[in-house]
Image (cartoon, rainbow, N blue to C red; front, side, top):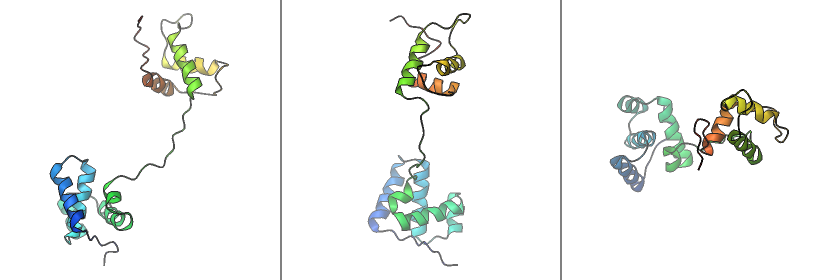
Length: 154
């Protein structure tokens, strides 16, 4: 069966890929894709490339297709993510959380826990959130270099 996506590299592209491989400063994924493209340009079959480089056939096909459709850089690099991460806490809520963590713990407690901070933040009337996980609290405190286990007076 004839290949739909035929790899034909220019001399500059071949030199660029060989230079990438000789330096070895790129990620393993990028170097493997460069090897796939060079072998495909030399006329190797997908099975031969699969055996030589120990990569999946779908990776080889995908790399060929991206080179033909989108160009050399697209074939070498990862696709940029299209996922959007929604933050549960805005700046105001983060400020309240940090102020809460810096305050004295409630009566009967020696120190704040992440779950206790999460529960107290939801109970506050000043912050308009229905729920927040202890992991979100941990990430906010880590981002601001706040630590529950370390107290500093300076």
